[in-house]
Figure 1 (tube, rainbow, N blue to C red):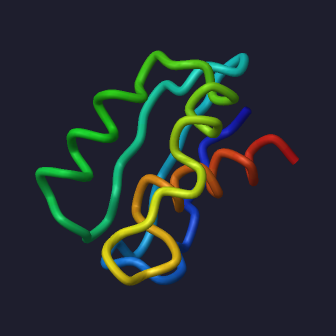
Figure 2 (figure 1 turned 90 degrees about the vertical axis):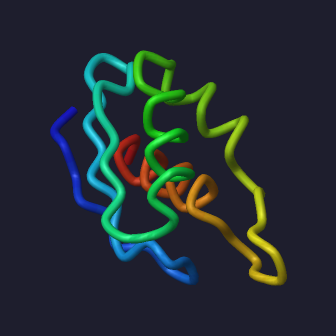
Length: 82
């Protein structure tokens, strides 16, 4: 699968660039957001199966928001699966 740049909705991060190859996450780069947290999430999911990451990250909320940067990453991965 090619890399995509996913425009986030409802988070401090503005976009997420995601590359998946044969169902495995190769790289993740958040544009904006809480730098330490987004870098940590990106490193944790690199090498992980995309479906597993979607299961783990979907539905995570940030404070009072209905979504979060990890949840938006799950949405981006879903877009890649289409």
